[in-house]
Image 1 (cartoon, one colour):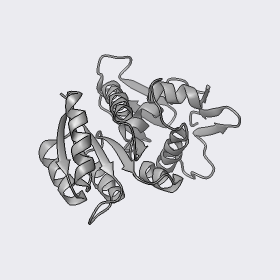
Image 2 (spheres, rainbow, N blue to C red):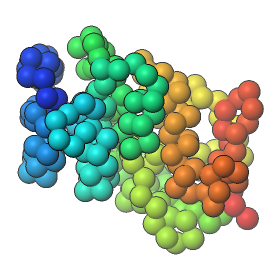
Image 3 (tube, rainbow, N blue to C red):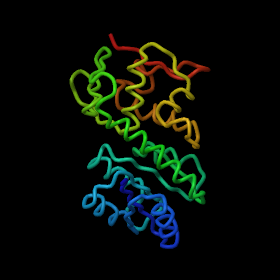
Length: 231
């Protein structure tokens, strides 16, 4: 059973979400603050965290950063009451896998969670394909969920891992946003395709010598992105 930690300070919203998720068969833990959420995460080891941005004490961005440090393979969906792109982008740059703007339909939340579940399952599947993929200075351990540049490990989120694995399986091939979205997030994904661009920016910041002038993840104007092996 998938364990979900819901970090939301508004009791009525938290109870409503919890009831709906339990009806879908999820095991749900509740937290009313960021600090409480971090404590419960360390104690219960959830698979997915639903994380509100506006929290008493430390906000959702800081909670996300701390959880990522402790649990790099954790699935995180950010919940925001604001529609501004700034909050969405900040959440994704903090290491979240997806975001959902309140108010939302419980069915949509369930679909997002199940989509992330499938992504996490692919991330942990030890029976699919080669164990290692190599491209120039880069090597990815598909089973061990590790990524290296010049033998130095770079921490990736599960979503980033899936994107890099897709790129390294399609060296020098231009992939459009829909291809990346379908391969990584799934064809059922209902969110904004901009999530691809934000994750690419986050990846470039981790692997490029100069993220403003990328050498490895090239932009193919009018198409999408291409992985170019380092020399």
